[in-house]
Length: 212
Image (tube, rainbow, N blue to C red; front, side):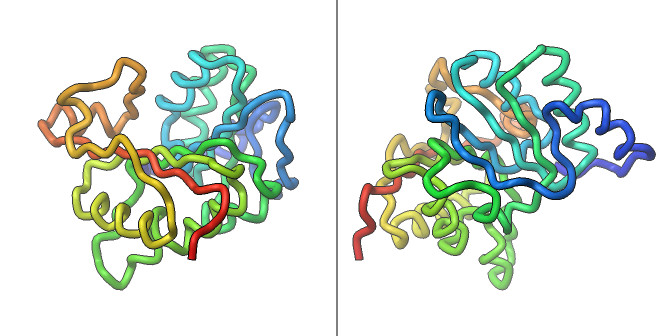
């Protein structure tokens, strides 16, 4: 989610230095006592703050390149007094550089940019290029929870999951037709649902050993 750049964002982010990282990121190792879930593209933080509040026993990291969005998310984390959320201003293209091997238990990819032009396919966060990065950082059997309003991106993603040898389950082209009680809506999800746009969803799982 892109917001208009606001003045003094860097200075304001310093107020949240206890859980917000801007700049160089030290390699992240998993706490062996707690699961680690990572959201790719945290936006303004509605999703990660809600899910973290419901699951205080799990550690959450939100990656987002837009500082203005991170600031909005940080304010929500502080308002809810969440101790299990860390936010990082970071470009997901470099995700394999900051997580130890198999450190992540689950990834959330919520309403990422569909990059509709064919020549931009490699920029889609579900392209096989990214899936190979995710394979390195996810634990054996780790899962990707994927939501999008874009049917073209969803169909493309299912093809990429299959090509990369992932198992896919809970596939639906209308998540809200029979919405699971555990579903947590993002900012975009509420917007699209209100406009009558169906939400596509699936869970893709890495096998313990790659096939092929």
